[in-house]
Amino acid sequence: MKEVTLMKGNEAIAHAAIRYGCDGYFGYPITPQSEVLETLEALMPWETTGMVVVQAESEVAAINMVYGGAATGKAVMTSSSSPGVSLKQEGISYIAASSLPALILNVMRGGPGLGTIQPSQADYFQAVKGGGHGDYHLIVLAPSTVQEMADFVGLGFDLAFKYCNPAMILADGIVGQMMEKVVLPEQRPRRTDEEIREQCPWAVTGRHGRRKRNIVTSLELESDKMEVINNQLQAKYREIEANETRWEEIDTKDADYLIISFGSVARISTKAKELAEEEGLKVGIIRPITLWPFPSEAIRKAAEGKKGILVVELNAGQMIEDVRLAVHDSLPVEHYGRMGGIIPSPSEIVNALKEKLIRGNA
Image (cartoon, rainbow, N blue to C red; front, side, top):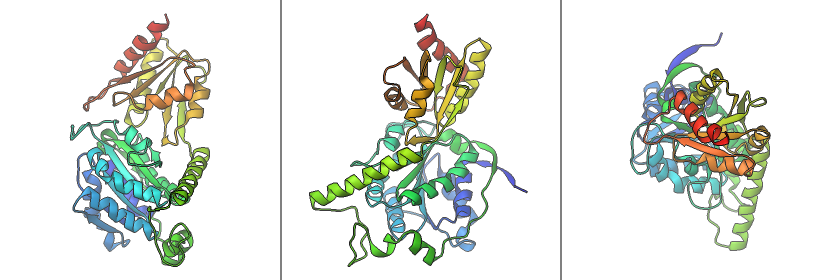
């Protein structure tokens, strides 16, 4: 019988990490994700599974500890919130360039700058477009429930190891702080050293064919060789795009209008859809689950024959750029967003739909 537990999204991350068999967590406290570290410290998994939990001296130190742990083939992760993730960007770029698996949690807060501790979705560009320097991608998962916070730990690690690429769970402060029922995954045994050697042979032999010494690095001083590495990365990204795009659709087939949103805002948009239907409007919902790879083809197909799309986000307009690229100006695409930690109500979204799209088409 499955055990149903009531907990915060941040707490679910910590429990799921232990149950996945995570080898190491390296973090630093920052609101609104501090419960991840606090929960791990309270659970003391080093006494039960052998998981290492370290509060590093800074965000920069934490991500470089992840880099080192990933280079040995271990399942390692970190968590932070918007400005803390900004500090981690150089290390994240190094991990991506070295083709190493790692899991990063970003529970977004309002910005720019130190901003507010209230929820936001303004790190979309930072997560989806790379954030750090160079041509690289993270696999980006956007949970909208506490259950998905727990589920995406395992999924994120599995995808990271499958493609030797860092994955990010991009949540907002609402999902991190709210409490819901959750069914936690079964406890996985930690991998043995032999299993790690089989799954991650580069942890023994090094990267990029350096067989004489065990070197894992993102540095390559010869331009022609660096281009080869970049082309290998791009080929991997095309494979991820072809195989790992995820999304949810609700009543899109017979709809006149689409609302596209992710994370907590997708929940609010679903309620807005119900209110709109009470007024006789036909509205469908698309929720991107992977923000990268982005479900462009699914959105393009769903948009055929529609009168317009409203993109709803907790920012000034970021995901809307990818939605517009997906539909190629075939129909109007408008944005409604709130910033500074203000959460839109379902009725606000319905009013925005009518003001920006329906009355404009009248």
